[in-house]
Image (cartoon, rainbow, N blue to C red; front, side):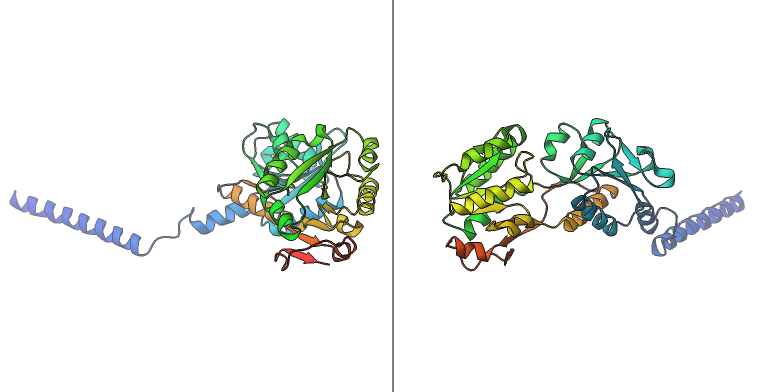
Length: 322
């Protein structure tokens, strides 16, 4: 009896020693089992991303090329057709199916509108979209990089560079951009600038604002508005403003080239890299949020001299003087 008890105790003792040894060994020298961090990163990078493009135009394609270069994932392009439906040009991915992808990027407003309207069951990351909130509405799981550049920082910069400019007129169609004007007016007020609405219902009304020198404004700020977006109209407005010694402020390099004193220059390739970071965050289950595009300002030295404008010195670091 006693002998049996001793044998049983020794067996249990040996068993416990083996358990303790195994636990010590597994903590000190962890096994490389499936599901570790290395395997997880491989899984994330293998996730396929769809890119739905509104129109095949240079700004969009510049952004897409940069996005694809920055992403470490297989991607497939789709384009919006005349009926507003995405189609692909490559073999097995000629039809857009959300089940084939882990995330989708909307390039431009038409692409974003399609994805939101059809309640696509994928994380949606957008780029190259002005006022995305108007399209997104109450949809969830949507984030990205807008084309909205009129924030408090931009108006502060205008005030810093040209301190004499206090009243700025904006030509826009209220049907398109009343919300944008209202929000911009709030930002401008904090920067010590008053925004003056120069409303137009159609293109024919633009010339009415230039029959005589506008006496209530120190400068004109362009915003992306479909009523005022043609190059011919922009050239006309800049020419009329210069005739009245009124500086204009634009939102891309074209305005600088046509005679605006200050232009916000958005690099579409940089927007692509910003969107790529958002995609990576989504695929890693991290936070994704709204961003503005990174941009720099271009100061037109020739126009400054022609209009005899007072410019603060030194100019901010993010201002290129040409």
